[in-house]
Amino acid sequence: MNLDWNGIFGITVSPLELVVRGTMMYFFLFLIFRVVIKRRIGSIGMADVLILVIVADAAQNGMSGDYHSVSEAFILVATIIGWNQLIDWLTYTVPRLQTILEPAPLLLIDKGQILWRHMRKEYLSESELRTKLREHGITDPKEVEKAYMEPDGEFTVLKRKP
Image (spheres, rainbow, N blue to C red):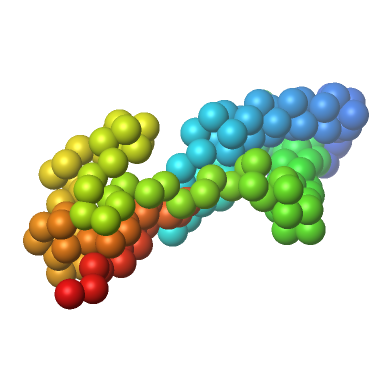
């Protein structure tokens, strides 16, 4: 049994083309997930899900032969991870970028009053809000001083003082 080593590790597409394609796709999806759709799901950030999906697809293409070699998939995956690391580092070191790319907590209840405009902004129903309040031991929004939807999708509830 002979293995085609050139077919496994050879490069059939320009590495520069792979880097450019990976860069373009990353920034397109980055724009959609971090700027347009700012809210995050649960404790896993939207950017984390984005990276997982792109890397899985890039690796799958390398394994199935769409790129014709494992080396091409390695270059594409490294490009995607590299851009993600750079963006994370930049948002950490440049606070102004963090305010642009990471959403601020969204105030949902202020002094017992539900802020319906903010609820509509996140397509959050009253029953969903009440469910989150019950998880914090609260049955009536009037018991709440402030309630926020955090960037990771979790809720912070501050009770009113008696």
